Amino acid sequence: MQRGHTKYTEVGGVPELRAAVCAKLTRDNGLAYEPADILVSVGAKHTLFNLVVALINPGDEVLVPSPYWVSYPEQVRMLGGVPIEVPTAEATGFDLDPGALAAAVTPRTKLIVLNSPNNPTGAVFSPAALEAVARLVVDRQLWVVSDECYEALTFEGRHVSIASFGPEIKARTIVVNTCSKAYAMTGWRIGYAAGPRALIRAMTDAQSQVTSNPSSIAQWAAVEALTGPQDEVAKMAGEFDRRRRLIIGGLNALPGVRCVMPKGAFYAFANISGLFGRTWRKPDGAVSLKSSLDVTAFLLEEARVAVVPGRDFGSDAHVRLSYATSDALIREGLSRMAAALTTLQ
Image 1: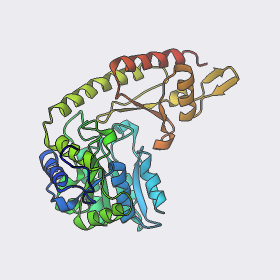
Image 2: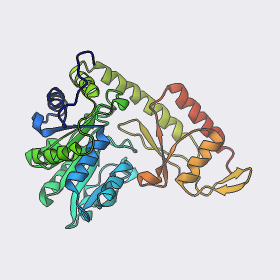
Image 3: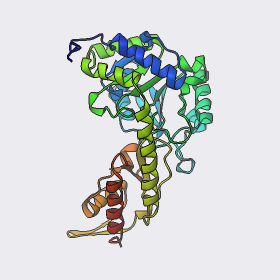
Image 4: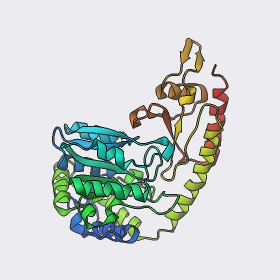
């Protein structure tokens, strides 16, 4: 701000930030882009919406592996598209299912949405599954958006982008990332996309009629985040790795609850279907737990613990918990949940 970076910028972001994004993608992902292949937006959610505006026509089908982040199908519906949920299996750690995706492709399919590490499950899609989907996309001439916002929080192995499997899939991939997670810059609202130049140009045109440029001040903060020392990112990831083990161990000790170990992000997607059929004795009458909404209400009222029902993520058998908090609060929350569960009949 003191240097005067408070004016309008180019719609797609200042050249310095687009160059910093290119350098980051080369450094971390082995992906070569030029600044003209980059669009900077008001957070990754805005980036994703720009893509849907530029690409999806009414009636186009978009394949969304389930469970999914809640905005994917809703953004598609807003443009008249048709989201198609493609289930993944809890037994595989919610890994991508290339066979199920291939079976869901129709002549109206235009886009596949990938999110790894995944919100809400914490799944990290295996390289073999990603490579199989890359072949599908190229063979059927589809598009794929790869939401990699939680890339820095990959706990087992290295993050792999589907765009890295060769020039043919890279030409049909839009890589989306953000400064929000790796640099804890949620309120700064900076996301970005890298992809084929003509599509990036169309997304930029869409953005020009909605927000114009992201905050000039936040853009320069993002330059520093991407080009500065990265040591703190690794330290943060190590802390989240420790917390995930703490919360997953605690959840699996609760009667009627089970939770697979997430490989990334900072969410636990706990299966609470073992609580269905149990009775919650409320002052105004008994309630039989039948859904994630029921379990969420029970935990909020009886344990004073807020979780997110899995229904809106595509699975009513689960609830989502975040471990982006302190050890003390994680332990306190688990303790309250354990005490509340003893009251069920």
